[in-house]
Image (cartoon, rainbow, N blue to C red; front, side, top):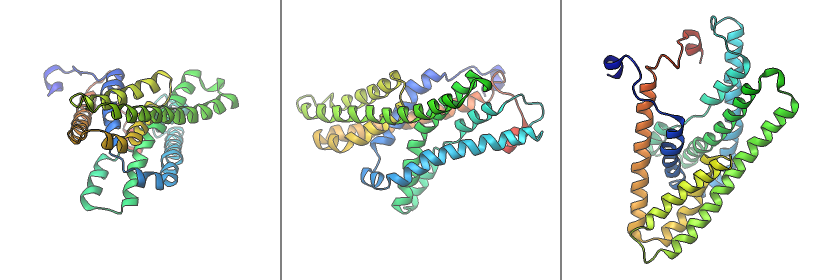
Length: 277
């Protein structure tokens, strides 16, 4: 409809709007509704899929596309190895929203469910870190990348991931303590859950840590205590408002992704690249 009316992309979704207004509520909802006992009892398997699996996926995709490029399958596309690895890191993480919906409908084995769900949550944080590392490498330029830069990239990967998780844990502890003192202000009680969740996200972002992992661990750490500390009506309000915000954000993101497909100023059509990917 927009293409028919204007012949241009009228509306754009900026990274600032995406990362600061749409993404936090989706991740907060996912972390808050996580079955904790299952998650932590299968933590080893989830981390293998989320960290090693995502890195393997990004590397194999980037390298294989680069190999096809060297073989002449991409035509005259002017992209180097680092750009292919950057693209690999961008597309490596799966967000299996539809899979989770199907899993809940058919009641699959709970271990399989938590493996897929947990991996889909943690791989977001891994991918953001991977993308930033490769983005820095691309800016630096191939010849300037040496062993020291690669080691710094690997260390930053772990600092960003674990630092973000730690920030989330601290804010989870804080909201658990705050909700013990809100008995007389039940009408604004649910507000603290959202405000402190958003503050966890912003704090991690400000410290250049993983904001996604921060808000996930904040949701996971506090859900049990919040449900015990707050009034039953407040707990119900938090659960439903969180779902509404998350679903609304998800819908808006997909609408804008569709609209961005008609912007010819930001993409170039390459049949070989698309088919091989």
